[in-house]
Length: 394
Ligand code: FEO
Image (cartoon, rainbow, N blue to C red; front, side, top):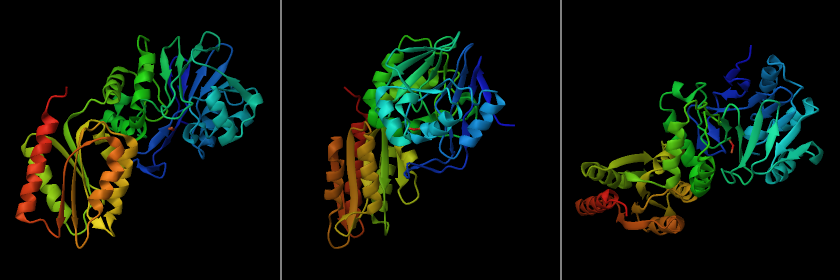
């Protein structure tokens, strides 16, 4: 017996739970696994499947659809997004559902052709605002580009008022059917936002603007549980996409012989003494997803790392590169570094982070272990950071 769930009348979750997955894009840790959500929508005359599943799970999807009596009878396969974790099952579904048309937009068609070699004869192109009648059920398509690929779109079931936004509003969590059943789900959603959607915050605001004024009773994303109360996740996204920050500083550092760590400890203690939320990540033992989650609303960033072979320690360099591409809304930065016989870390860190246009409040680069004077300077820099992040934003 396969797990399916009727989330609204005639609307079935037929996705899969991947409890074991621990890494996405060979980069992002997923401590709680994830789901690949596919949804079956039954109309009086036609049956639609919204998105598929990650490659390797096609058999489970088939089993669920067989159980519901719909396998082989799909009329429309909706592709909200071409990334293989949702679209990887398309060739299999098309092969076994001969009358199914792949419903997608023009940009999606190019990607479906390139990634899955789908022939044009199987495609039905839609544009923003187009509707698809299933018989007593209407699907409306809302283009939402770059959330987070160029072809991304939302599908809205008008009668039941269920929004299927694919990755948007998602979370990497394999548990629960509904968001309110998973403790701290919003913390997972925030990490997910930081990893995937933060570089596209402007597109996120555009996507939210398109939803404004719509009555949405339920949000059924492609990862994580379904939001049967849309308000918490929509309000969170309104805040996260706006770039609102709080008096919080995320400190990421690598250390080899604890010289950089000694400065990080003083910096963090000073921030906390000044009433600032300090989140400290030793990059040797921390996960990028948690860092990305904290960067969603941190007003300050501190990068720490010693010089290794004339440049920044590779772990700190990797973190700096990730921070650069996920584009957090932080305003202020500070650097903490140490070296044995020749520097280079600070120069490289500044170069990598330059595109973010952070205001650099200072850098402390010590030869060997920090002296009492170095630690005093570290404390002063931390106090300066505390003062700046506590200032009301204009
Ligand atoms: Fe979950 Fe962008 O794929």
